[in-house]
Amino acid sequence: MEYDILAKVTGFLYSPGSLGKNLSKVARLIVDSFPFDQCAIYLWDEEHRLFRLKALQGVQKGSVETYREKEGIPGLVKKQRAVVEVHTPSQDDVSWEGVEDRGLFGFRSAVVYPLREGHRWHGMVYLKSSKRLNLPARKRRILEFLIFQVSCVLKYNKMFRNLRKAYEELKKMQAQVLIAERLLPLGEMAATLAHEIKNPLISIGGFAGRLARKLPHDSPYMPYVKNILNEVERLDEIMKGIVSISKREEPKFYREDINSIVNESLDFFNEVCRIHDIKMIKRGDREPIYAMVDRAQLRVAFDNLISNAIQSMEKGGILKINTYKKDRWVVVEISDSGGGIEPGVEKNIFNPFFTTKEDGTGLGLAITNTIVKKHGGRIDLKNEIGVGATFSVRLPHHKP
Amino acid sequence: MKKRILVVDDEEGLRFLYKEELEDEGYSVELAASGEEALQKLEKDSIDLVVLDIKMPGMDGVEVLRLVKQKWKDLPVILCTAYPHYKHEFGSWASDAYIVKSSDLTELKDTIKDILGKR
Image (cartoon, rainbow over all chains, first blue to last red; front, side, top):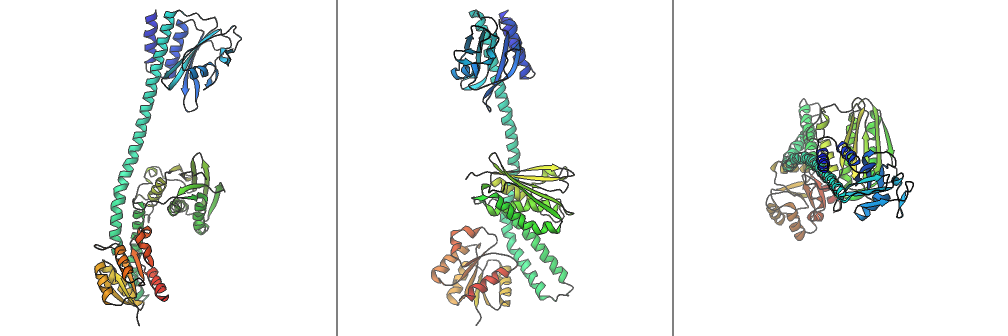
């Protein structure tokens, strides 16, 4: 009989299936094999610091969903870090030795076992009996062993979850490292290259400029020269982009009002919006929202996002800007009504040299992303196909 | 009497471009391909202003600037560089102006005019 119980509980606990289901079976086994009318198994919620009911078997009366850290008999168990056994004079009593617990209503005796391992809490097992409990020592030892088994399983369960979480994080980090690895040599090599290319480029552009000024305006060769000048300008833009992506330009952080940077950027695009029939709507906090940022770099980031938004709405639309604080973040949302980003394109948008525009360099969003990351922030994209795209820039909030 | 400008740059193409452009502006232009050559020219000729590239093999522009300012402390020097990294560097503060190179030499010309006009 006793071996039976132990064999069964091991079978239940280590069987595949959800933890809740397995714990329910264990609770059933306890109610069936011991003189208890109710068995409730609670799990410790570290984040909210409370015990949550995970499995309940036996009678339903007096069952409590959650216990706060210092609440009721479970609170006492948490404090004393030991088993607590309770006997009340009648079933109507809901307190014992000054501790109130509505879970006691309808019962004469209760035992609460902690499920813990040192300082680490997994939960507790709350056993209740409507009659006064008198458990023989041998049965008690079996029960304790059973509870120990539950504790072990919860420990393994937690370890497994932690392991899976670590694995997921590792996978995420690996993906980031891959991106960084791709960007870093590109940045370093390109920055050197950009310096080497810049001088000849100035020569070409400079002399082409001289030609343009010396040639008669109606010269048939003028379009050739103009072409050289345009291409030089384009190359120059690309070079500037590469240099700003590279590691060399480390941001210099000062406490700045993010709203004022956003407004500066919006002012800059005001005229363009008017020309393209784009309505600009600025919402959110009007008060200064502070973050430690490199003002010039962040301005580039906002300019890029706003410019992209505008470019997606060539036939007019609505540009929405929202700035607000959320938890420890300053959030700047830039939304367009340009129909969203095509599926398949989305995952590439932050890659350098990726572009869907005919005359794009493919560096705008790559630079923007690098800048925001250097600020300890991140950019999220909410893409609604057929509607528009929303880029959310998050920066760590700086409390005054 | 034409003002004399010394252009110091290791890039031949740029020296040529600066010479053409600045001569069009009415200056007389001397050229040096390195810091060492620049210092020799300064010893020999009387120069009114130096246009100095920062990134050069051998003695770099910031070093040349230091030597020039030690010896001819009133001689104006305009530092030029491809990208604005050096702006924060201590040595470059001592220059009279700091310019990011561009194929459009308007800023350089304006700066030269500005500095020489004050003298």
